[in-house]
Image 1 (cartoon, helix red, strand yellow):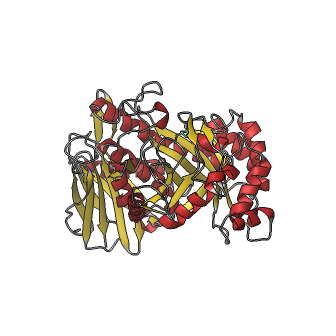
Image 2: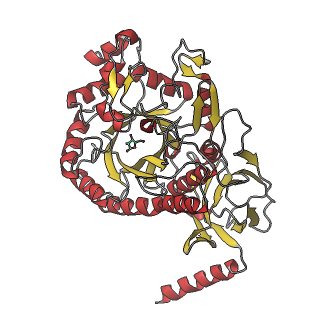
Image 3: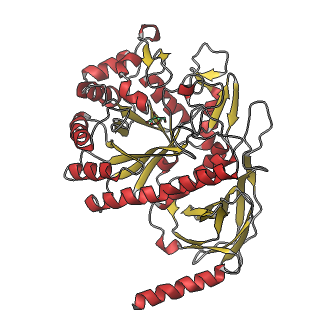
Amino acid sequence: MKRKIIHSIIFLMAFSAYSFGQATLKLKPEEATTKISKEIYGHFAEHLGRCIYGGIYVGEDSDIPNINGYREDVVFALKDMKIPLLRWPGGCFADTYHWKDGIGPKHQRPSMVNVHWGGVTEDNSFGTHEFLDFCELIEAEPYVNLNVGSGTVQEASEWVEYVTSNNISPMADLRKKNGREKPWDVKFWGIGNESWGCGGDMTPEYYSDLFRRYSSYSRGASYKIACGANDYDYNWTEVLMRNTQHKRHLIQGLSLHYYTIAHNWGDKGAATGFNEKEWFLSLSKTLKMDEIVSKHSEIMDKYDPEKRVGLIVDEWGNWFNVEPGTNPGFLYQQNSLRDALVAGINLNIFNKHSERVKMANIAQTVNVLQSVILTKEDQMVLTPTYYVFKMYAVHQDATLVPIDLICDKYKFEGEAIPAINASASIKDDVVSITLCNLNPNKEEEIEINLGSLNVSNSSGQIVTASNMNDYNDFGQEEKVTLKSFDVNNPKKGKLAIKLPSKSVVLVQLK
Ligand code: AHR
């Protein structure tokens, strides 16, 4: 009872501050203990549409400037964005992929049909060496997804051996014969993808047995990620956690997929030219990530209270209808200011849950779904999502600073969502606060209470645009980019900020 009264008083005090029309955000640096894994800022590249071929890899003989076949512009852009990790080769493609088709002299590699994505020919010119060398070039950790759906345990086991073995062994010898003396340093391995769907249509009971078998023989893989649930499928998480609870050496991560779909799978809406209703729908659906992650985490807590198994959100992002006139199997979509907000909100949510969420991978790096980069022949566009990732890189491996946020609602046609979404971290004595103003029509004032922090200098950056559906296009000046943002220095432990409508803002204090 006493506790209830104290809570009500705290709430009323906070609310009375807020009722002057100003949102409040209180930083709690004394509770800052959890590291935000840099892998939360990870990406995903599948053999799908023009993600790998044309987007990342053009081959050494291409007229497009390249480094050993990798697009030079894309390499520099990804490095500049500080990409920490890349997942490959799928997605659904992973469970059709036979890795031995993608090694050795290119002219001897067999072609296959990419059955999931457009039925196009896959010539296997981008394989294990090309992927792992690319990760070294862009200084990103690789995350390789094994084939459980149509592969064998032996094939998976040999792939891990080929990549990681430092011994004299058949697979290590084959790797050396193919020109790579030293093993690659690959920590993260996924065991199947969407095994409840495109990866074999399995039940969680059947898959969890299979997972234990594949994981046992993936010697050399130090961080093994079991295929996890699709969005609200809590039973899948329950069964996987229950069936692996006494086998902690076999499972280090459990995945989760949740895509933001404004309408429904039949009509996902257009990536550009949308109205406020679609803006509101996308943002409210994307906020569901918080609830989904919380509920899966609660189940994981039951079986793993020490939080040894990471929740790996290895596919997320906006999924819209493909751009008119493009191959429906290539999932090519434009990227607007709405995508910037969706990226900012999800990254804030992952930061908040960083005790359990150890990795996340937005789908997909170049030319597919919510990409950070689009390419057209030799041209490249950096999307609004790119600029949010670049801005949020300050959170990578920083320590989460818990917050209390009280704000107004953004209302539309009788529905309401919080107008502001935020997270904060500290690294090398610099505090970074990322804030999204979801309201496309109204500036939001926020007062930041710095608590016990002793900081006196501030700086800021912003991603916004004149219109909610502005985007960057080939051959045109950028409409949505990263700009500096004026912030006053804090006074008496407080900082007042006006967040422009429809914006993503970074405030740094030291
Ligand atoms: O990212 C596109 C597809 O979405 C992936 O291949 C699959 O895992 C998911 O259904």
